[in-house]
Length: 347
Image (cartoon, rainbow, N blue to C red; front, side, top):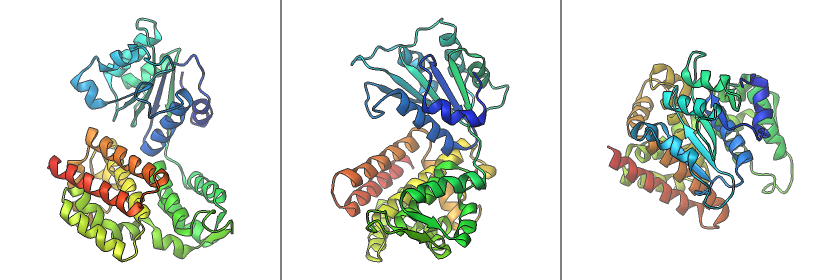
C-alpha cells in the first residue's frame, strides 16, 4: 500500500494489525528515523528487549543474505510480539525479495518488519515491492519546510512553558529546515539553555534572538569543536584535555552530549545522502576550512556498524544521566573516552 505524505503520521501511530512490513523512506533521514521509532514503539512495548527486537543493517545483509529471512522466521522465546528493524542506505534487492515473499505467503514471517532507508526512486525494487504489497506499507518522508519546522519547535517550547519572540522566530527558521533529527537537536538545546519548566519553578519564559545566537549550531559547534574533533577523530588524550578545559570554563556536560549526538546525526545524514559534496551541504557543516577537514576525517572513521555503535553509546549515556543520579560530568567524560578509543582503533 502506498501512503500519501499527509497519511503517514496517522497510519504509523496506530498501525493496522494486518500489516506485516513497513517501508519508511525519504531524503529527511531524521524524519525517517523518527517515523520508524514511532511505528516500532506501537508494535513492541520494549524496543530494548533483545528477545523481542532484532536489529539488522545493510552490512548484515551483505555478509549474510539469509540473515533477514532467518530473523523474520524466528519464533519468540517469550511468547510476545517480535519485530525486525532493518536500516538501509538506499535500494536493496534482498529486502525487496523478502517483502514480496512474505506478501505472497511464500514465506512465513513470525515477526513484523520495519525498514528505514534513504531516497527511493519510483522504479526502485524496494519501493515497488512495498507499494504493490497487500500487507505492506510504503511511507514517504519529505523534508520539513520552515512552517512545519517552526510548528514542531513551538509545540515543544509550549510544553515547557516557553514562547518565541517574533525576531527569534524568524532567526530560528533557517536552523531547523532540512532534517528532523537536526531540528530536534536545536530545539532541545534551546530548551536546556532556557531551563526546563520544573527548573524555572513553573514560570513562563520567552526565547529571544540572543538566546538563539548563544546556542545556535554555528556558535556552539565552533565552541565545542575542540572536544568533538579529537573524540570522533580517535585522539583520547586530546579529547580528555579539551573536555576538562570546557568544564572549567563552565560548559554544561549535557550540552556537550547533545552536541555530540547532533554530530552523530550529521555523520548519519552525510553517509545516507551519498557521501558527496551535496551530502556535505545537507549536514550544515562548512564545506571548506578546518571544520570541514575534521568532519571529513571523522566520516572515514564512522560509518555503518561503527556509527550505529556510537549512536547506541550516546543513547545509553543519555539514559544514564537521566536515571542513575551519577554526575553528568563523569558519564559524558566516560562516553567521550570510549568513542575516542573506538575511533583510534578504526584508523
